Amino acid sequence: MSAAETATPPPATSRGGTAPLSRQRVRTAWWLLAPMLVVLAMVAGWPLGRTIWFSFTDANLSDLSAWRFIGLDNYVGEYGVLMDREWWNAVGNTLQFAVLSVTLETALGLGVALLLNHPSRLRTLLRATLLVPWAIPTVVSARMWSWMLHDQFGVVNHYLLALGALSAPLAFTADPDLSLLTVVMVDVWKTTPFMALLILAALQLVPPDCYEAANVDGVPAWRVFRSVTLPLIMPGVAVAMIFRLLDALRVFDLIYVMTSNSRSSKSMSLYVREQLIDFQQVGYGSAAATLLFLVIAITTGVYLAVTRSGANGASS
Image (cartoon, rainbow, N blue to C red; front, side, top):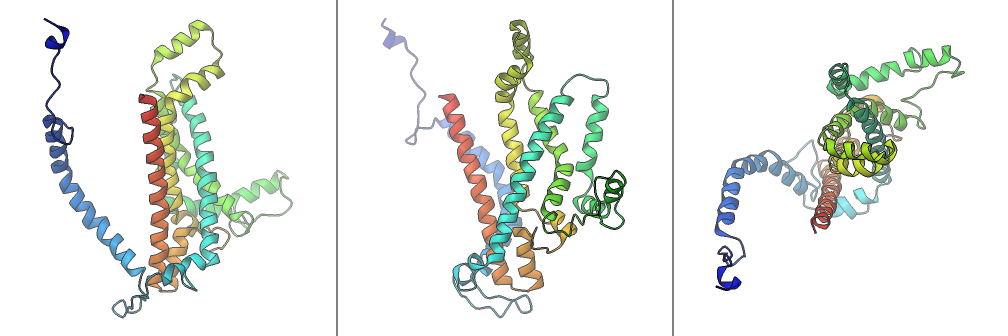
């Protein structure tokens, strides 16, 4: 009997090229996801759709029933969002905040995770202590740091003056040159534990055999980290970074509590809030909110595309 006659025939496939069992699993998965998708559409889809619709009108908060369809004027009109210097200033502030905070949090989180990954009797206590900044509500931590950094009675200025590091107190949250960096510093203090725990989880998934083989071969520790540890934990680090990046792009409470509507630190979310609440321009504010949503959606899409192409390249 020839090899062709004894070969096992391939599973029967449908016109789309998917085996019946696989199609059944996909169908079952969709039925299981259906309730969640319906709830998500009700909770998130309807407000999002209504916001996008309002962005094409001149609706005002004082009377939402008296609106007029104006097309793209809120976006590209003479006084549209994309023509407003304040919007682009908010975009620049948000990007600076996101890049600086995510970069510093990733670097510090990696260092903390490497320290916690080593066996120690105090490791459990250190992990619990590490969670304290992350557990404090953002508004509470922002107000706490605002008092600590106050130029008249803040403890930070007090000790810096006592040590001779400053000749005069600094208004960390009021100085236009310092306010954005101050907010970044507070965000790094609060969110580094989140990054550290995610990276620590990735580190603990690295097979010990890799390190044992490197030790037998006498590979230096830095080279082990660069050639073994870092490539293996990069997927986990990438996930942590994208979560933090998406969170940083929509930052609101931290900046609003510490610097209010200061132009030097105003984010896109604060710009949206200012248009919607302070100026009561629902249509204009909805256009700004829609642009913010598009920025986050595009960032997510780019990340998913890059991740998928990297996974396909690794599997091939």
